[in-house]
Length: 123
Image 1: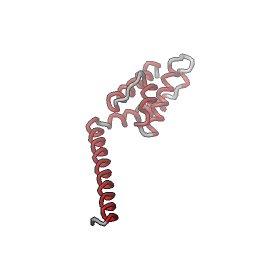
Image 2 (image 1 turned 45 degrees about the horizontal axis):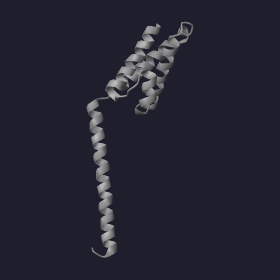
Image 3 (image 1 turned 60 degrees about the vertical axis):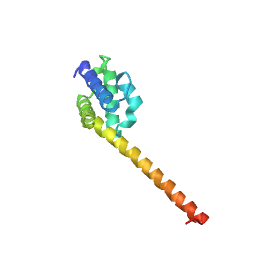
Image 4 (image 1 turned 180 degrees about the vertical axis):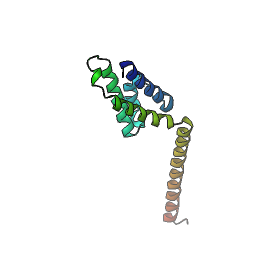
């Protein structure tokens, strides 16, 4: 596996993070620092391994030390997770979460209002 291939893999994962998760930054390392919390732990660890492998690939003496099978597995894991994310589903989940928070807040306020009215003797 060449240094260019490892760098292309890291760039592809960075591109997917930008398009699917809207994480900004220059390069995969910056994107992981800014939006790594949006990834599951194992996918984040694989992406960090890709960053490390891309850094090692820049040095010709360290290039033979890169575990090619592990790099391929890490890349496939990141690709599998990021291609499954759709922008529409994320927006729908966000809207559902906001709606649930509003409904719960209204329920708590209504329960407190009823409690105060009973306590004051109006009901």
